[in-house]
Length: 539
Length: 78
Image 1 (tube, helix red, strand yellow):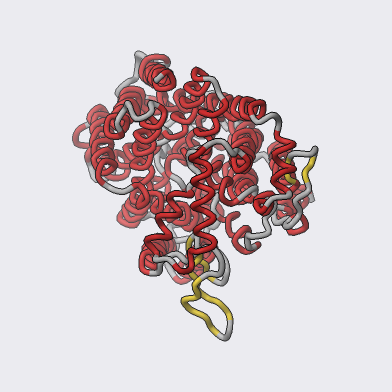
Image 2 (tube, chains in turn red, yellow):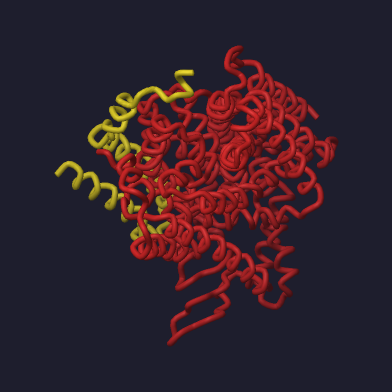
């Protein structure tokens, strides 16, 4: 129960920081202050809050769980590719969006698209697409909160109550604190993430008697493949470099880019972003792999056994049986198990708070949705003009309550796996939307029809991949199920982990076709007025 | 010339991410960290260095100047 108490203290601290710690007495009813902290965040808060916004529960729980079953490849797949691509996109796109926001007062990406391409309803279509891809994150955040509190308290805090507490805390500081409160909470949480990684590595390393013996023992065991990438296709590995393109297309990340006081604040963010990724992901991936050498934790043994049965007998099982074994072998809780085994109770609680910080990353997504709704729908369709800015802010707050309550209600009823899958599709979906930003900022010839083609293509492909994976069950570990081949070449296959097109993940053709659609459709359609284009390409 | 060199550096680092030369190696650097993981850790540090180069030599300072030259927006003045 001690770890649960520590987590509750942490939640109270977060609530205090979010609501009271950085409250300003003046200008509370200004939309720009509530939704963008008056574009005034300093370099330290900007770096850590932007990074924290992008680090979901997956950074700690999912990365170690993925590494537990797949080995060191996890870091190259998800961390080092992000270490290059995400800061690069912040450098190229984030700075430009910030400057346009300062010049023209944009508060959302859709506002910029509407102005840049002289469109209205196409902007609404982009809003719908962005919102639809964002909602699963909010639901999974509440689910993660409920599950984590349940696990940390040893079952004393039921799932429904844990989820409700997390939903209330997040709703509380987003409702009262707006962007300023959310940014400071994210900063606090990121510092906690960073401390968590280092502390967990030291405590577990000491507990295991050093990592050298474990690593050498693993090298000469049947699990040696976890130390290399011999079971991973280079095509699959390459495909993953497209996924981080999604980061800059996420509305909550782009909206965060608008909060910097000066453009200079991007400098530290761009330089330190790869190092922050290294500091959090490397310990988590390493510990996930090393967890396979812990022989005296029954739950870890059970996971390994489920993995072994799936690999050896999976071919003769039904898809449902395979799914059940996949769930049993899932390693998302290995870090928690390692901490329970090696850390003292109070430290486990503190580290549990770090994990809690990761699962509560849905705050900026809730705020982003609220900002998008009030700016792209309420204000755009006349609400701000009719009722004024104070009502707009209140509408944003009401929206926050509604979206949190709906997400909580769904989290209580729906199975978690559905939303985990939805998040997988969302990454590819946002990556496929990234050509919108590139075209708007770097290509004078882009048009609203090109933007519509990209949006429709993204919606269709996200649905198509989801339907395909629902119809064709995942095979057992080993060769993929070939669904369509042409002249001996495998065009479409169902792999144990998802779908492959010509051996690549769907995100690769999604992004490439998206870019081509933007190109060809724009070439064939009418450009915006020269005066509009000139405002974006003055330099 | 400077811009071309930076573009080449970004492209080179992107290619270096696909380190097929360590694909099957289980060598342990320092006796405990697998070479494939160590390489990508170093890759992340190289990415930070590249970002420093971009920020130092290709910073879009014209954007800042454009913002400063823009008159305050009406809502700010109100």
